Image (cartoon, rainbow, N blue to C red; front, side, top):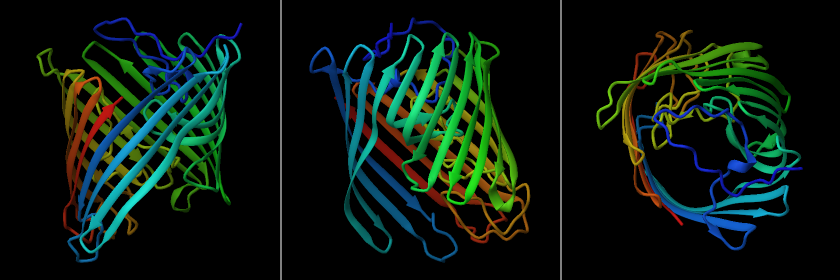
Length: 401
């Protein structure tokens, strides 16, 4: 008999160190929670947040002290319906009202409705699920996939194992089509797996392959590793590229602040190209996501090496903060700089791109409210022609209904 797709996941047993869950790119039963019931089969939730984003000197090489300030209000709705014992429908919609002003103009108020997810999931058996529609895909470390897509997805999930196949297109590009296969495993100490993503983007054809490993060595030390390769129409006119990302996280003590330190190193060759569906975001056990390669710079991992050192505190499930420093290098000095949030002319005379320091965190006063904040500064190295620093400040207050 087919297993029903539950409206909410059961609560986990409390333990000091929870065993990792098998990493699933998409799980229909674990979409955003719905807290209010209209009937036994229909439930919903809503949320609202207000956000501020301020950036300085992001544009380069123009001899202008540019600035950008954006405030935005978001309203979101999540709905779930159990259409039958084995069929579930889910939708997540959001509308935003943004007001952006720069040093030389005002863009006025812009309303932007978005359909983030709209899907129907069919439970074929106790282990197999088939899903159609718009879905949010996300791999274990958001290194290959973290985006809304339109398509079809199949998953077979058994204890400690998952097998997934999908065919889809991206929602931000009308010319990109993908086919995906993923296999993942998990045990009491870690999880690992492999993912293949075939991409057709107009005349360009690529195959992305990636593996991931996460292992807890002791109760205070764990590591994460991602490694990947791209074949076909890779970056910079190459037909092949490789990249990897390794992070080690060490809890320093059992004091009230629960401090931890993170060491990271990432590398991408000249031909390495990430999928374009990734986000390079991480929680590192905290309450909010942040960009693992820099809050201001946010580079793609092509012809790039990144050294990271972070210190964080995790005093409770209500608060976390991370202070992170990054240093950036081009393995092959080039007059073409990395694709990043901050772009500028590089001289080709130096490998050293610059440094960044950032602070990110979150506070949850209650289950219905959340405050997130972030601030960072990027200082260019001698590889950049424009030597002016760039800064970014972010704050968001969310309320859940």
